Image: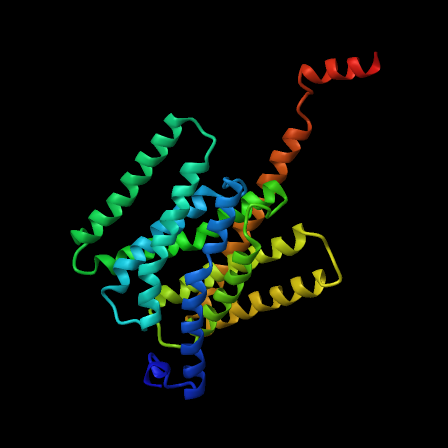
Amino acid sequence: MAGLKENCDSNLPIGLCVLANICGYTSNVIWFLVLLPQLVKNYRRKSTAGLSFIWASCNFCASLINLFFILDIDVPLFTRISGWYMPILEILMLFQFVLYSKASTTRKLLLVVVSSVVYSTIIALECTDAFGENTSSKMVWVSIVLWSVETYFQVVLNMKRRSVEGQSYISLGLSLMGKTTDVIMQFTLIMPMQYVFMTYFSSTLAYVNIIQLILYTQHGWYTKPAVSVLGLLLCIFVALLILRTSVVSIVCPIGISVFLVAGFIMTRRLRSKKSVLPPTSTTPKQSDNKVV
């Protein structure tokens, strides 16, 4: 029972602290499982089409930096366990991108080399305390930025494809549950401020991804109610963020909205350009053959 009373906020009832710690352990279990359905789907399809490599790479880099951070601070056991486990799953995801890519061998090698240099640089900076004794605390802000933007690239790719077909629906469902329990934990317990902002950004974009799943699949009676509920929860996230930090944090949802609108406009312009492109030389010939 003592483990359920860690990092409690003295201003909140002890029952909420227990609930938040239970959510933390629940979230830890979910994150152990969340990428497995996606890895299995990729393996069965022998493809990572529909998935953003930038999303996967940002995710791994952020987890790698976060691993060094949690080694230097006092966090609940479930956070420490997740910090070790997630980079393993994410490196497997990156391996699938290379293995199943239809790009040339040269491009694959270039991708591996560039990625290896980036990951090695992160490890070197952390191990040598390149920025002083608090290197891990300073570097973790990089992971916050990466976790803040990682799902954005997947969301924009979904906008471009008008589909979430490449993503595992099971992984998306687990992500929804995991992000929800994360919000309850992070905004209830006394946690590093870095984690509070990280949870807000990552959870908000994860909810946007779920909204895409609802909108891009076959519509039903549940579509509007589900989107409305998710929208309401996003507003609650903003209120919790402001209560835990300050009113200045209102710039966070504004920033997310601006980038989402920009991504939407960008994808619309790309589709418009494709629609006005002149037909290829083969099109008239095929048409002529049909007429003849």
